[in-house]
Length: 466
Image (cartoon, rainbow, N blue to C red; front, side):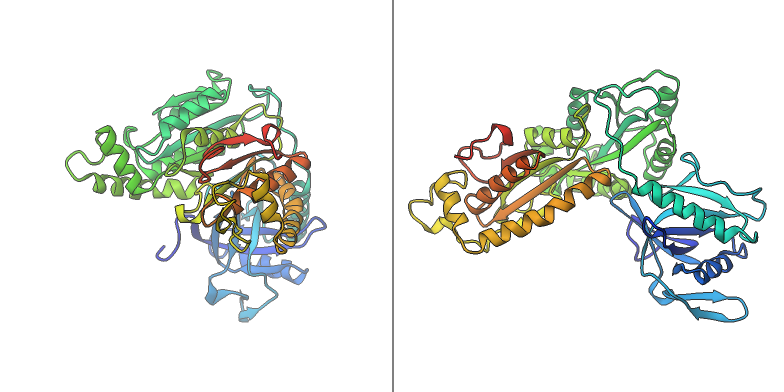
């Protein structure tokens, strides 16, 4: 639809938000025109629910979660037969945790089970069939919403401490795609090194049967790009949806990206031909591939931009997100950087410390980096430093467990200053030490510091803070 992003969709459905003891639950009511979506929504609203969208629901995927809202012109109104458009209690947006397929022939709905689900915009959502005209329909839906909320509120189970999945557990599968020359082959090699069975350019349709037939019994990394026979985004996504819907597989889509100018330099230096630029300029081939693969990038669980990543940092990033047998828990990487050199594209959180006093203007400190105790003391002596750092740790302390609860396995925190040598390095080192004191697995690196420690990443336990 015009004006909508690749990870958005306007769906013929009604959305409501139900309150439960474990928090609000967004429910999507689906069915053909006249199936009773608005009537059921009215009964739920009369019992305390809030309308999100009537008949037309705008869906958007964010961070692997699905959210619903109403088009601006329809927000807060419900069409009631015999009354027309009516203002009702509403919510601007709700996370969709349950789908109700309205079917007058439903023999009696059960609460949703794990395998009863629908995949929308790459998000798998539990689903139940429901006769909307049954007197108990609203009560059953509220009961299902409470059950779903309780399941979401339950603490996550720790990951197994083994490279091989236990019998009965979902097999990890990473589908690796992206732009030619961006590093897809390197990503497959890294995944192979950390315990995955890497298979390049195998049609997606053959992976599911191979796994389910028992031919593959360890984590799988599957490479697929425009060199695949009959490659096209829509068939690719359809095959991916089939894999995601398979309970025996835990599938993630990884997209390897890179800036156009860097891709052009790489192809020029290696004298390789771009697959789509055989008879036309290199820039045209890159542009055509970017257009072809944009739906895959929008759908990806993780996008890694390799424009500024050295191979060791790329390996660290891949291992952090997809490592096996690490004992679970959120892995953290803290890096300093220079704003002059651009933001680290893999960063999840970015901190700007340019408000602190700059050691660059002190002649005896200028040649040093923030790893030197004298520079660290100078930065810490700024009256604004301690309030800033105290507020930062108060923010992160409750935030990190929430990331873990959402299933995030790796987090990159980037700390930037003007030159990336003094203030950002000192703050990154102190933050890394604090995280280690909290029992966190953390690595600290300095992208633009120059000299000792530049461009390298070290586990905090191996670092000297003296």
